[in-house]
Image (cartoon, rainbow, N blue to C red; front, side):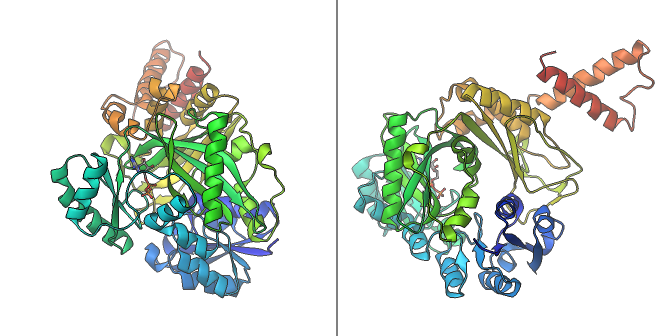
Length: 504
Ligand code: ADP
């Protein structure tokens, strides 16, 4: 095992990797921008080095500087987390050429899966089904028109270099195609410096189901079952679960074998994820491979009972996977909610400010992977995901109930968050029945964000009324709704919330 690893990331994933290092007896070196000087990952690491000003292109994206810091601090390996440099083949190569270990796949595998068109070609060659569409960039609108006609509307234009839903356009009518192509190309050029756009058939109502794989350097490639990630807004996941309510053991085995075939075709090593669209008729199509640890990895960890980040480090250090495929059977149910600093009542506008009060949920089956604490400053430099709340329970209904309980316990004051949106989402009968698709959340957004008072407001009002009644009966010394009694209201409201969750 390594003696020391540099963690080239920030926020919750940096902390996650540091924790994995500590449990393996490996020293962790954190890096941070000036905006993150007081961030928890800086404090928790064994050493920390400032790498530049807040903008990520002057700090977390400076590959050469990260390699230099690794050398200077005596780290033997670099863990890139997700985002930032994690899927940059040039960085993986530069790390290797510097005589260090990149905790992830070889640069060649990142390259093979890096462009969506290349990945589609590779998948087709390996016998892996892909969504009908092209495997080359479109030359112009005429070509796009001819291809779209051949498999019928709607179609989806996608940036070959795409990620995070950028450079994607759904086209429902032929007359929209030329303008959409121009827009997708411009967006792709801006986001990725590459305007290559291709076209796929737009599937109606599929699920996003992805398969976790682990591969060692000695030829063992295993799959760890699937994650259901259909609850998405603007092609960005909001809630994930494992297993998927739509996947039977037989389908799990077929999707798993397909993911393993794709990983083998790319010469894959380390942890990776094959994303699929699962159609209503049970057919599934390879979308892409994410060549890194994913945000939603904890749900797999909880149902499969292993630490994926520790295995990333062990694989990178040359260890063999000691498991057999048949030992991976999901146990119970896990759900993850992404807690973001966005205001659902305001079109998910990013919210900034200082976290003035943070109360974390706990109790059986609750896990918090966060990068914030009391006093954290939330700015606009980085991704709005503050933390992930993850639960594990024996069944899906119990996992939903546990997540609802944990979300109610969570208090984040100082910035708006997605917490109350998640509560409403989990109350919806379709979500409770697992009857969802990738288009479900967008179709129900208005209903889920409508201007009804959220549950906190209702609870606060009930508490103020109850305490006022007690006061009237002479049981309290002072009216709590007078100025300066905010904390009294908060305490009472939490107490009332607990009574409600106990069914009192
Ligand atoms: P990105 O890399 O930008 O995240 P993906 O190819 O992974 O792009 O697709 C993101 C999301 O867009 C998917 O999870 C799915 O919800 C939707 N999507 C992608 N391809 C299709 C398709 N052919 N039909 C319908 N929806 C799609």
